[in-house]
Image 1 (cartoon, rainbow, N blue to C red):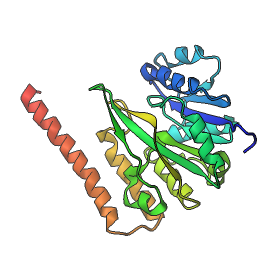
Image 2 (image 1 turned 90 degrees about the vertical axis):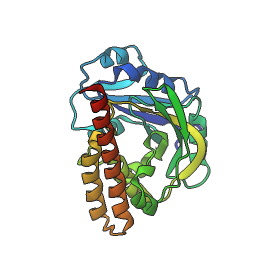
Image 3 (image 1 turned 180 degrees about the horizontal axis):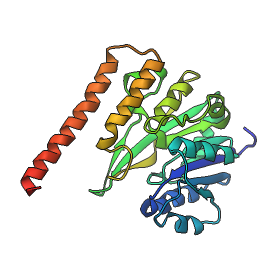
Image 4 (image 1 turned 60 degrees about the horizontal axis):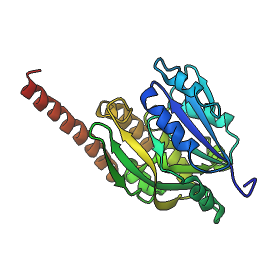
Length: 259
């Protein structure tokens, strides 16, 4: 670390999330931590996002077309000056006053990355569901890619740069790809405390309609890593069952409503 109070750089990729991004910004701004910078890389939003960004003079931000989320994150990393790096999307937000805990966990021994718990916020229902992040290792990521908890993860910047940061060839699983490369160096420290809120809503990338392109990218990662365990096929079954359940639900709802 460069100082007794390590600098934390938060990178937020954004595109047309104006209804949520102000809460995201305030969750960083109100951390009561003295050494933090917040970098927003907006993909040229056509909603109110830019007007909101202009309201906060402390932000480092750009708004221009990019080649996807991984490209935006790499742009943000080039602008970052912190010892530690966090990535949180514009529709998610942090738990209050966690940055001091984040920094202290990096100062206690050789730690390359740290992962806390998350809380799911179901936007349509207005309810919150706490979730405990499962232990992460190279093998556990291959067995169950869904254990990735990007919102509550922080990296030592030097290690993030060492592994090559984000791969812009991925549009759905750039987080899993990064986690696999990080896990080859070391397993993260797991913190059993809520660090972020993951907003579940219809406009996000993780909706059911994106599961098929997501599976294609996961299959590519499995092939790259020479992963041939039978568990690999359980990942596919789980994803396709989710698609099937969603499709059946849509058919039933459509039948009941006459659509």
